[in-house]
Length: 253
Image 1: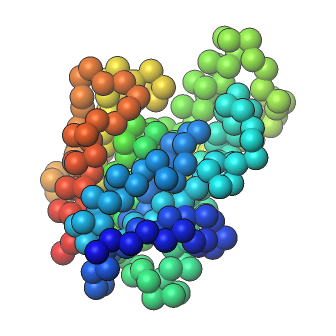
Image 2 (image 1 turned 45 degrees about the vertical axis):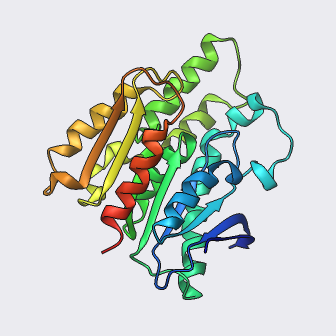
């Protein structure tokens, strides 16, 4: 039996999808930009079928935490939301461990788009994450943020920040940028999925990062990159099923 509970963990609105199996590993699944926790229940259901408990949090300003801001305003908060999600992840983990619901080193993380970016930053920050899956994510926080700023400027949109504030924001992002410190992965299982035709989160920088870290992995089977040649910024059913298989392979022992 699979149960779904709507609750707060460390003050964060979450859906808790439970497999009712004993001693289940816990997987956090982070949603994308302008999405919400409910939109990823199909991942949680299939993972729960495999015996995992799954936590689906709402990111700041999303879902139950929305303040009604439009997409343009939300775009200016993008990195604030990502960094906040990473720190909230740690707080939620600590609460679940203290309750005896989760074991410190049996916690996985996955996400789509903004969520995929979030978990790559979390892998940089937290060594307790056992296994990760990044769907359409990017580890290069500073490089991606600079590209976003250039995109805004080309389209005539002025960010509500001074040059000094932008520089300060980029310095903050360095602490979460996995591409600057790939050794922080420490051979942990990590899978990427990305469509080559993605125009939102570019494919090539993430694939280049994968090729770089693949050389350093002691066990190559712990690192995987799935490319779909014609897909854009939307995960296919193959990506969904491969995500479930990845966690089933690496977190059930």
